[in-house]
Length: 361
Image 1 (spheres, rainbow, N blue to C red):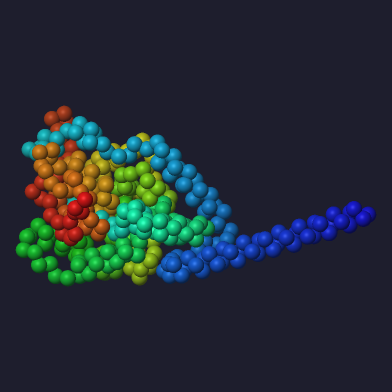
Image 2: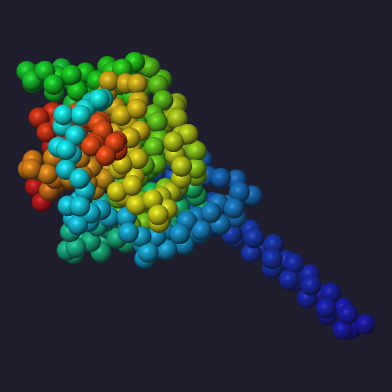
């Protein structure tokens, strides 16, 4: 009986220990959320406790997939592939459709903050800060590295683009003026499109917030615009046919409307960057709009120029990235090759820098 009594006392102590442990875990989660809200005051509400295990499982699987993609991906479009691509000028006299396209590169992301500002002494500080942030958001539907959101500097860059678009256009060039008007007041004849990655969506939502507030039009999320890279920051947190959760400014807290039916989820190993470029070029030329405004990414944009501009045409856009929040317009043409294939060409005379331009390195 003494042994049974001791076992019963032990069971009670174990139960009390488990209760205390669960209480401490809840307190830790609560404190983490408080720290997260201090770092990001406009953050969305954290998930309910019962939803955290499934959220952690989904994030864990995404981390695993991101690691697999990092190792085995062949997403980059190589110089050899570009050289082997048919010259867009081959269809110069066989054009049957053209559409104005305006590229808007996203503002600086948290990934850019860490890895694109050099690797001097400040790199260690930046890296440590973002790693701490990543630890804070482990139980939340957020990440600093995967689907990397805008940094605070990136948000300021978006606000500067927003201010630019609120001012009157002064350049006498009619093509540039038309692009500016299409962005600011182009509802009805211009379509808004974005990569499903948060930094691209956020940039467009902030930059043209006045237009969105006036029209409540949808931003089409197209996964073919997902960045060309094997890095973790190019993987999306938004599942297939859903929109990402964005926050951080009043514009992002507004009631935004998305069309996620073209978000087919994260890129697979077989859907390489070259294939996504062609898929998007085909899609955009079939849209019944005069202008398509695309929020996206530097490598994707640069490769698009390399593939669809005539091979004989030399331009800075083939060598350098559009700067953060830079805006560039051009005319994309669709035609039929001698073999009967649908092909695409950027009219080199149509290129216009609306804002920001290209980097110098």
